[in-house]
Amino acid sequence: MKILERPMKILPKNSWVWTEEEEMGRHTPVMYSEVLSYLRLLPGMVIVDCTLGEGGHSEGILRKITPGGHLIGIDQDDDALSATRLRLSRHEGSFTLIRDNFQNITDVLAELEINAMDGVVFDLGVSNMQLVTPERGFSFQFEGPLNMRMDKHAQITAFDLVNNLSEEEIANVIYTFGQERYSRRIASRIITERSRHVITTTKQLADIVVDSLPVKERYKKIHPATRTFMALRIAVNRELEVLQSGLTQAIELLKPGGIICVISFHSLEDRIVKYEFKNQAGKGRLKIITKKPLVPTHEEIENNRKSRSAKLRVAEKL
Ligand SMILES: C[S@@+](CC[C@H](N)C(=O)[O-])C[C@H]1O[C@@H](n2cnc3c(N)ncnc32)[C@H](O)[C@@H]1O
Image 1 (cartoon, helix red, strand yellow):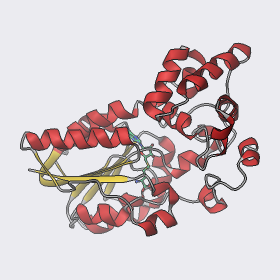
Image 2 (image 1 turned 120 degrees about the horizontal axis):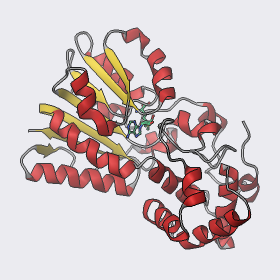
Image 3 (image 1 turned 180 degrees about the horizontal axis):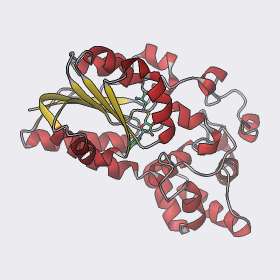
Image 4 (image 1 turned 120 degrees about the vertical axis):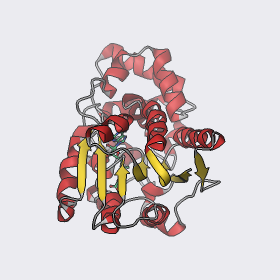
């Protein structure tokens, strides 16, 4: 595992450099006790975790819905499924893990002959395991291929976007999904660099981003490539598109009284959740429980910095 050296040198004291514990550590479930308590879990319930990840939320859910209950864990990442199957093994028989995109939740449940659920959880974004595995290419902190696919079977990678989109398309992706004010400068630099050589690694891309920014922007608390990497990840995985579709289906599949909990980490994601809840509430299908999104406590943020941008919205099916 090779950690990128260059940004470390230019930003020696800044907080984006992960601690060793964070680098190696298991994913810490975000807003864990809030999610578990809003779900009002009871033995016998059927709960779907649409973003199984490393199974933090799922493990807690299983403890409360057994005996008699069943958890369906969906994740599009094979690695998450194999690691989490082991973690949940003490609850064997009480869970089913499925590799799929949550945008196919209706078909997944139909195949399992489950026609309604008592609760559903979406904990969006990437897991720690994905972030710290260099070959997955999600992080500018590790040297790796420009990949960023959560679903290894998906066709498009970050490499494809960076090396094939037009300058305008790259700028639009970085501006829209990353809310990066220097999107045009970054896109222009990418085009110049790729006319000389193919851009293949996370380090190359991180360096291009750093070099394209005005000097004063290179010394910020947040690594200068953060927004560009996030934007490409969102585009590669079509994260906003599948969220809209997954939410609508999940609400449809909830039993009356069933609860939906959604944790988002990006303002565009939160906006989709907010408007989908509003829209369904307007049609009399949903009661919004969190008028404003809940955020992690100071204590949680101190213990898990990656939780700092989390927003939790909860609603009940009518
Ligand atoms: C933030 S992690 C979830 C962590 C989990 N709650 C835990 O406590 O360990 C998000 C997970 O959702 C998966 N994921 C993201 N979008 C998905 C989608 N559209 N369909 C299926 N899985 C998705 C990712 O592969 C990742 O493993």
